[in-house]
Length: 174
Image (tube, rainbow, N blue to C red):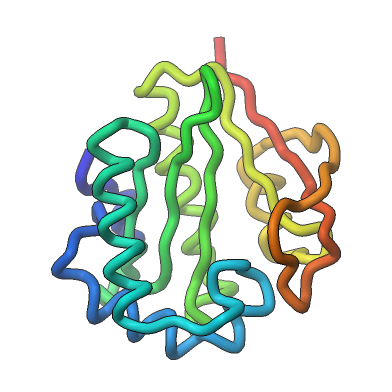
């Protein structure tokens, strides 16, 4: 479970030794990420990288979340994805660096996470994204999720966002 792959993308459990690459990836795409991700609005640095990696290690151990680095076929860090427990289901979250968007990596990573959720006995999987983020919205469509509604976003609203999240759901196959 520490590593998942479909032969194209590889998901690797985030660990402290990834900090420099993780920080460089975020900082290198900060203009892109801060428009969509609340955690990137105020910038990013090594301290925030350490905080992220400490938090995800604790969440992994508790079974609350499983967060992964997304690597390309060329072993380049493309972004991050994760499963977050939601009752008897899981929610998928993701982001990519600016240079790795539009290549299908998040769709592939999300498919791997859906398969993991089923192995973890989930009854459903959710994906949520801002209504203005068409690229993020294409992922659940490609994976067969159903649009089930909208909800107000919580917390700070990044500049490109509407403040309304679209909610997608995939039921466990019978």
